[in-house]
Length: 512
Image 1 (spheres, helix red, strand yellow):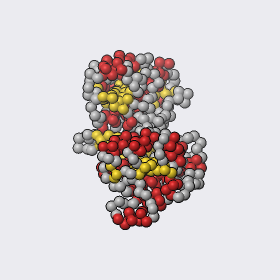
Image 2: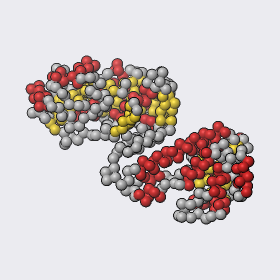
Image 3: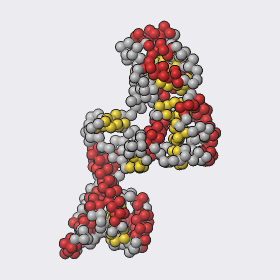
Image 4: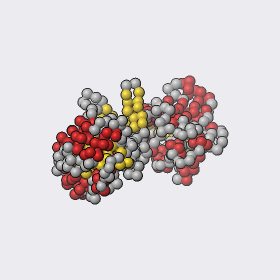
C-alpha cells in the first residue's frame, strides 16, 4: 500500500486535472507541478509547489528540462522498505513523492498532421514524462502512477475511503497500465520515424508492431475448447462498437459482424446485408432501409436464420419490425431510433452494436505458423470508365446497375466467389469452392429467387468457358469478371456465342 502525502502532477491532457488536484488538496496532499499544469492549478486556487523549488534549478531549454533531476527521480524511486534508501534521501534533503500524475505529449496527433516535418515530430517526443512514469511504475509498491484521467475519480474515492491510502492491487493495476502506455508510445514513435526519409513511404512497415489493449475476454473462440479475447485500437469499427443490448458477444459473432460491416460500407443508398459464416446470404440497396432488408432477406430466408445483419443507416422502427420476424444473432448499425430500440428489446438476447466509422485504414493482418502476413485493405472501387466491355453486345443500363451491384457484393464473398444479382439485390452466391464452375453450380443450387435475367459477378477470371456455359443455363444475361486468363479469348467467344454481355474490370478480389 502507499499513503499519499505528496503528488507530482505534470499533464498534457488537462481533462479533469483541476478537480482531481482539488480533491487531493482537500485530503492534505502536497502538490508539486510544472509549467502549464502549475498555472492551470493555481488559476483554480490550488496550492502548488513548483518543481524548480524542489530541484533548485529553473525549467530550461524551452521546457525540455524540468523533471529530469535526482531530487525528483530519487523521491519517486526510493523504496520505503529499505532503510538505506530512506537514509540517502534524508542526507540529501530529497522529499519522497508518493503519487505521479503524468500523461504524455500527443505524438500520434502531431504525426497524423498532413505535411508534418521531422523537427515537429522530434519536438513532440516526450522525454521527462516516460521517465517519470517508468520510475513510478518500477516503484509501484510505494508510488501510485496515474496516466489517464479515467482513473481520477476511482483513485480519489479510494483515498477518501482509506485515509489517503492506495491499496497494493490498485497500485499494481496502475503500474501495468503505465508500462503499457510507455510501450505503446515508444512503438508509435519508432513506427512513424521509420518512414522519415523514404522517397515513397511503404504502407507496410519494416517492423510490424501489434499492440492493442484487451477490450473483452470472450467465453471461447471459434470452438468451445479455444480461448479468445477481443483487442481494440479504439479507432471505430466493430472492435470499438458499443453494445446496446443482448447476450455477450462471441468470437464468431464478431467475425461475422465485421464481414457484414465491411460489406455495408460499399453502398451509398440505404442498404442491408445478411451474413452467415462470413459470407453474404443476402444484400440489397434500395430507396428505404426496410425495402433493402426485405430484398436481402428474400434472397435466402433459410440461411438468414441465425445470421447477423448490418445497415448503413439509422435502424428505424419499420425495419426493426421486419427484423424481429426471424431469429437474428446480432446487428451492426450506425444508430438505432428510440422506436426501433423498443421493438428490438422484445428479443432480449439479440445483440445490438452501435458502430462508428473507422478513423483510419488499418493493415489486414493474419497469423500463420511462425509469423504474420500483412497487406493493405482491399479498398478498390469499380470505375465504370476503366472497365472494358469485351463482347459484341454492350450491357444495357439495367445490366450495368446489376453488374456494379454484384461486383460490390462479390468482393466480400469467399473465393472462389460467384454472385448472381439484379440491380440493387443479390440473388444467390456460390462461395469457397475449389473450382469456379462448382461455385457457379452452388450459387444456382442455393437460389430461391428466379435466376432468369440475372447477371453474374466473379471475383477472379474464368479459367475455362465451362463456368460461363453453366451460368448461361440458368438464364443470366451479363457477366462481370477481372479477366487475365490465358483462355480469355475463348471465354469471350463463348459469351458472344451465348449472347451475353461481358465486362472486364482488370481487378481481382480474392478473399481467402
